Image (cartoon, rainbow, N blue to C red; front, top):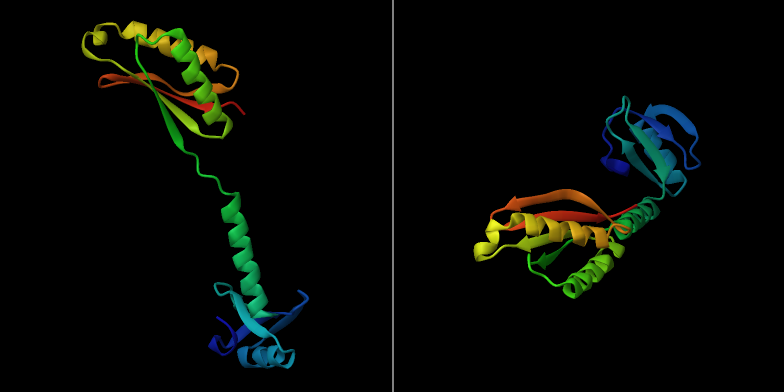
Length: 164
């Protein structure tokens, strides 16, 4: 709320330099702000009495928008990338996939490693676990296990994150 929109009987007023001007009527505070060619802005409506500040409202709104924009720019959404393996993967293919995971982790993403079993491969889950363990050993210097390898249907899934 600004200027005439403030309908409270008494408000605590803070000057443009941040000094306390005391408790006065809203009308009186508005007249003080108008004399200084500034706006009276309610900054703490929940306080008893509400706190108002004499400031340039246009500049205040611009600063708020700039702070929000800066905060949004610094935010980073973490994506989950997925790498699919099979129990009978060759060592060179495993190295290639490990290099790809290194790139993902260096960008700050999480990686979901999925080992898919097909047909009779389901009988050899221990082989799949060995493949995932050797895959993690190749990435041990840059990755930590976020969630241990676990069976979900026909897939064994493990999550990796970058080490701090």
